[in-house]
Structures are given as C-alpha cells and as structure tokens.
Image (cartoon, rainbow, N blue to C red; front, side, top):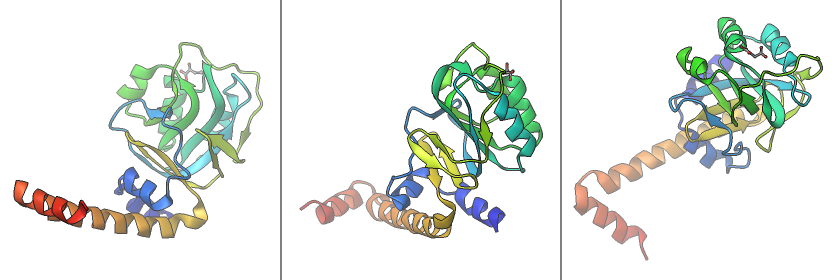
Length: 206
Ligand SMILES: O=C([O-])CC(=O)C(=O)O
C-alpha cells in the first residue's frame, strides 16, 4: 500500500500536489534542496533536536525503515549542523531516502557527491553538539508546518510539501486530476504555435 502510494507520489510534480492541497502544508521556501535535481517522496520519520544538538539524528537513523525521510526540527538553528557527510552516509547506507531539515548541514560537497537528497536552510562549518536529548517519532514543525511521524513528504526544486496520512489518497487523486487538466490546457494552447495561443487567449481573456 505504502509502496503504491509512493510510486504515484514520486511522479507527481510538487506544484500539482500544492494545487491539490491548497498550499496549506507547503514548507517555507527557505528550506531548499542542496542540489537542484534532488527529489524525494516517502514517509516522515520525525526528529526534534534541542538547540545546537544532533545526537537524536543517529537514534532516528537506527530506527528508520527503508525509504523513510528524516524530518528534522532544529528550530531554524543555523549555527550547528544536524549532519555532515559521515552521518549522511550512515543514513544512506541503511536506506534512508533523504533529510528535510529546519536547520543546516555541513559537508555540502559530499552531500552532492554521494547524491543524498538533503533539503535544508543552508550550511555551516560547525558540527552539532553531542550532549544528548531530542525525540524521535513525535510531532515536529519544519518551515512553519506541523509534521506527524508517518506523514507523507514530497520535495523537489520547487519546494517541500507535507501531506497528512489521512489525506494521502484524496490528495494523490486530486493532483493526478490537476496534471491531466494542465496537460489538456497545454495541448490546447500550444499545439499549433501562435494560432493556438491566440485562440486560447481569446477564450480566456475577457
Ligand atoms: O558528526 C557530526 O555531527 C557531523 C559530521 O561531521 C558528519 O556527519 O560528518
């Protein structure tokens, strides 16, 4: 079931999903992919970190199921990295699909080199502190959006969206319908160069 949902989600443009959700659960645009081609679709494994700490990220990696996306609430801290290349390789090695971070990472070049999809506020040179604390699997907030463990996450160059578990079927169907509608509109307006563009504009411009 989850696999089928993820297969349908991953081929949908995030823009169509946003149209389907009404945009209410779009993560703030300041959380961006660290490489343009990064695309994620899967279930959230939530992590909440005390300010400047990152120990709970390892706890989450140890609990993750294949395909999980770690959604890491670092409360927007930009001074301490929640992960660097070592932690990212641990995550990738056990099948974690990517990270969405309300905070920063370090070793950006390595994240790109290992092709591990990270969406974050940016980078820093400083490691996270290792004093412990934090929670895995509880409610978090990233980019102004509440996320429950197990919610669906999609992300690409246009942004990141949270889809509550209970809404997933309905949102996928609405987004698929929007894609079909967009394709029909594009065909109608663009299939015959200027002639079809003018015919389309004449129809929609009052
Ligand atoms: O250990 C850390 O906190 C971050 C780090 O440098 C790495 O993952 O390579």
